[in-house]
Amino acid sequence: MNPIPPTTYRDRDLYLFVSSRFIATLAIQVQSVAIGWQVYDMVRTPLALGLVGLCQFLPMFLLTLPAGDITDRFNQRRVYSLAAGVQASCSVLFLALSLFRPHTPWMYFVVLVLFGAARGFAGPSGSSLLPFLVPQARISKSMAVSSSFFTAATISGPALGGFLYALGPVPVYSLCIAGFVGAALIVSRLGGRRFTPERTEATRYERVAEGVKFVRSRPVVFGAISLDLFAVLLGGATALLPVYARDILHVGPLGLGFLRSAPALGAFSMAFYLTHWPLKNRVGPKMFGAVAIFGLATIVFGLSTWFPVSLLALFVLGASDMVSVNIRGSLIQLSTPDAMRGRVSSVSMLFIGASNELGEFESGTTAALMGTVPAVVAGGIGTLLVVAWWMKLFPPLRRVNKFTDVAVHY
Image (cartoon, rainbow, N blue to C red; front, side, top):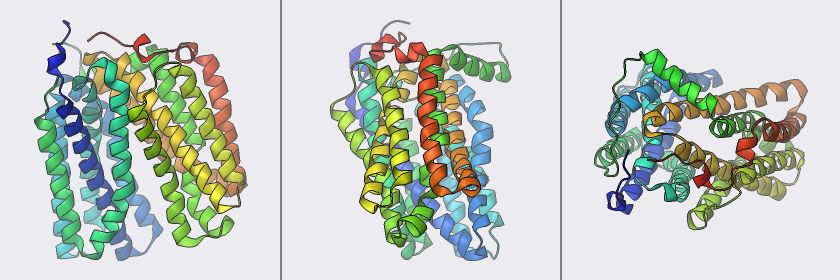
């Protein structure tokens, strides 16, 4: 493929892209607050809240890999826009349900399944867009910009959702509808490079399997993705924050809010730093170092009985995780040819989704078996052991100096 002239890239497209990601993520966070409150208000059982997450996770889990294949075979801008349009339609349905006030939450669960399916398609198509909007040399910095917008939406979304829901469901879902529609329109009009899929006789299963094999055959890509999977799986201390707030630190609901905000604030601060001072060398060792710091911060948090130390540990935990996220995302994007971006993004998202969901389950299970503090400390130690083992299993990842060392030509 011939090099694309630099004039093809426009800074405006990058900031439009991250703006669309911000408003879509904000809409998801705002809507999650309203849905959780409405469902729990109807049935008053924690199991219903678990079903809210399960109804979204299962379709996302089942559809993410096929969605990656579809992203590689069609215009990813169109795939994302259609998925965001379906999300907006789900917000319309939630608004209608709020106005008609059903007595059981089952209709909410049905719409949540559709919403989860739409997120399964929006994820790979949106994640694969960035390399088409910026030149290779700016991938790492652009990832930091995108991550900072995403984290800002994650921080502000729940608070905004709670404020708007106090005014009623109409403002909440109206904002969500506008957010998803706006994201769809923005992405549909982005410039940048265009990718024409190659014609192939392979079946859909073969194409999905090809994406998995590609990840498995690239030690840098597979090592980065799997390192994140096991680090988050073992170091999922955030799932146990309510226990720490009530029984260990004795800070109550207000303290729980601070504890929940600390990792996101650390991640946002690090993303802001990386936006202005992107990583340039020794990126492989720095990724392992960041995950090791993540494990150490988990241990410190697990042992702490002093609220300020716990907040600091969670802040460091979030900041180190953002370094790992930035390096992993940059390595994946730069190591992946255009024809595989959707499928590789879907595999990465599947790993990340599994680590988040299973990490919460693992933390809760081990805490029930061995106690909260031993479970968190053991998770941090396990993360350190994974770092040491992965450094031996994936020497190519450990030896990466600059991002350009793994970049494919496009």
